Length: 383
Image 1 (cartoon, helix red, strand yellow):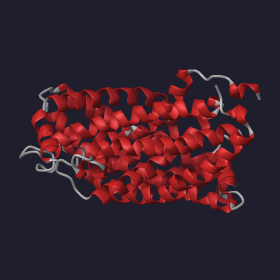
Image 2 (cartoon, rainbow, N blue to C red):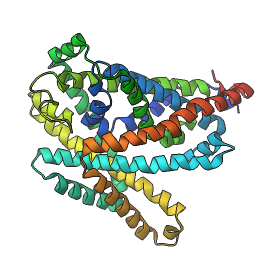
Image 3 (cartoon, one colour):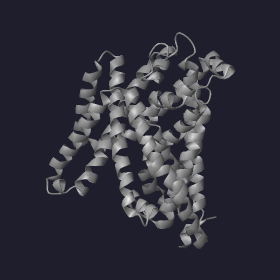
Image 4 (cartoon, rainbow, N blue to C red):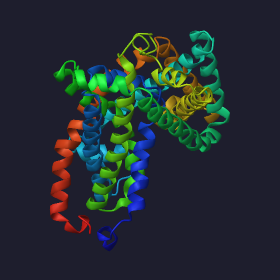
């Protein structure tokens, strides 16, 4: 019990914040499509919306981390059982939300890879099928290798996009100035809904945060981790919005005018005059899409193997193949509508579900239960 009141190092808090950042800064973020639909389309509000979204999600994840550390629970099932008690059957709502958003995430990865291949002359449908087959093969025979390589790929993609962000801002000051001079904006109530919606589908990081945050031990450490995470994610998302705003609707060569809205960051990279940059970015982004798809599908396998009797009686290799195949086929079918539509509809509805299943419960019931526990056990407040 004495351990919970000890001061937790800043490095430990940073590592937990990095789990959140790693989940957020994936292919959807790096493509620019996500930020365009959720923020940039609303004009100069965009960077402010991005920051408010991450503050909202940070408040939610802080309650998640506090609950995990005060209860000692390391899985989302246990946390949700505690959160919704005595109405414990409600925990299935997060299970439904999680499965749906994983399928949407895999669909977005397949669609994003398809859009990238389309830029280099590969028909969209053919690209989707090829990437789907590659994903299935990697799930069955190379998932561990992909998991080990995903960290390196994430670093490459982050370096690439930040070079593009900075170069895009420097190379388009007149476009950015135009946006903030004219103060064009669209639909403030819709922008507020988008803030909650984005935080809702980004709540998919909750299981990872629960599983890794037990090292924080007390409330103050959880607060530090949440603040660091908010700063990391808000700055990255806001900077991306500023860059995208400068190229969104500011002339004949803007990506809205030229129809390059599927992967706008690639289009911008191609306009910056550095031939190697768009190639390196495209390769890293495609690898990032594949990595996310493989790890997402691979993560579904043990869940279904353990929960469905039909798979419990089956050879594990056979059941793994069937589960992976079904997940990829469903994702592939959805991805055929295009990356923009996957994000517009799939993430959108998952976001609304996330508001109901994650955002509201943790900021109301979760907050109340955490405060009550800390009142009764002040040693968990920390130094």
